[in-house]
Length: 229
Image (cartoon, rainbow, N blue to C red):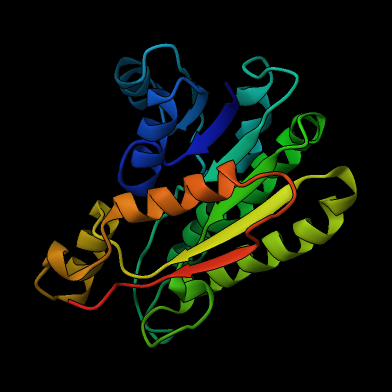
């Protein structure tokens, strides 16, 4: 049995990863946006610990996690994220700061806080990135910037933590049939057909494969794209 800290367990890919880990008996520590969401998560995952801390305020994470964590953590899965599309000419500053904060600064701070515990377990950190973390398209500048930054965070962390036997994995899913994808389509003004996109269960399988890989190897970067229909 292993212990994992997850963000984004309320929906989408993060929810499915949490369900799979919980079903096999792993211990879960779930970061929730507020007390209501924390209560929902503890009801959905009996035995899990839910910590209320909004990733939009990374400065609050230190106090939130101080009393909730064991001495060793086998893995962190950073699956939370937000998206707001818009052109550089039109996107307001708060759309930039909110996405950079939730998608990049919060994962960096949570990782920093938990790193001694991950080192103690010779554990693993998984960043759920995006195809936008590799290529930026028109209208996606702020979100892609946050995800390009997340790639840089993971790459640097991988080099820094090799001496501590900490594995670092980045997964780059293409468009996946999650509530976030539905939001993206609404922002694009496009009809949403989930059957066109990756089943989030497939991405969850990729993440668990990376976590469960024997210690002699690491999946450092893995891109997942919608298959042919």
